[in-house]
Amino acid sequence: MSDVVSAARTGRPHSGRVVKSAPFAEWFAPVPSAGFHIVLQGTCWLLPSQGEPIALGPGDVAFLPRGSAHGLADDPSTPASDPPATFTGVRDDRADETSAKRPPTVVMLCGAYLLDGSRPHPLLNDLPEVIHLPTRVGCHRELRAAIELLGVELDNDARPGSDTILLTLLDLLLLYILRAWFEQRRLSSHSATGWAAALHDPAVAAALRAIHGDPSRQWTVEELGAQTRLSRAAFARRFIHLVGQPPLTYLTWWRMTTAARLLRTSDAPVNTIAQQVGYSSQYTFTHAFKRQYGSPPGGYRRHVG
Image (cartoon, rainbow, N blue to C red):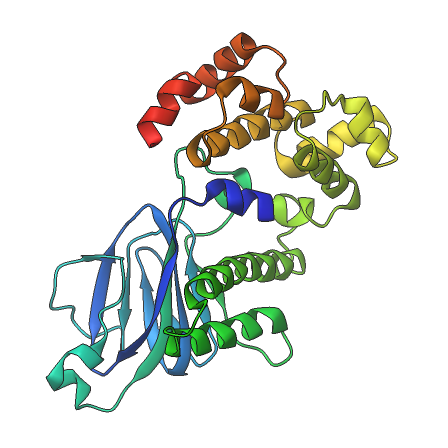
């Protein structure tokens, strides 16, 4: 899961503490990023583009993995007076003299992560439009600790090292949100297939760790099955059932995803990247990359740069 987040992330995440006073209703247009709203005090409603309004109370987390259009309001019936805004940050009522005089209805942590949506990992595709993690005593303790630390750091962001600490905490927050949701789904009645089950299946998880840990190795289905102490056929059936594609198809997909991340984030020569993801020939790598991304590695690097 950490590898998937690292491969998908682009740019820098951002967050801030927001105070809203009733009445309020703010709508956000869809964006190519993942957003979150965490209620620290008070209550509000999240209004998805589809489905019923979601009541949010103290400690609740709402995560929108695909940046879907949505709204925030003190009540679902409150009319929105402004056109949809881009979700680069929720308007803070403390900046408005009239609103600031009213008692706060809700205090939130709000933020967003920029993600590469051109080839989303199937793990991220498995997520719903909105992930709602209601607060429960004793549940998701790491997530709660990250929220508390993030809130403290945002209140004191002028201290030395705060910028690096905030980025680290935001990365942790994203991983803890995903972990909590996948664990929650695994315990539900809908976890027979998909990445919630794959991440907790010892055989498939061991194979995924092997692929992610060494994508340059010339893995075979037999070798991956041996990692899990299953026969070739039994392992292949289980992998396809949970991941949705054969092991070597996923290996190729992950190699290309890793190569794209290296092209975006490093100055390494194309032949070096080719070797890092398992291709001894730059020509073969270029052909495979172009088949996946529609342009050769050099052209891709120039475009995303």
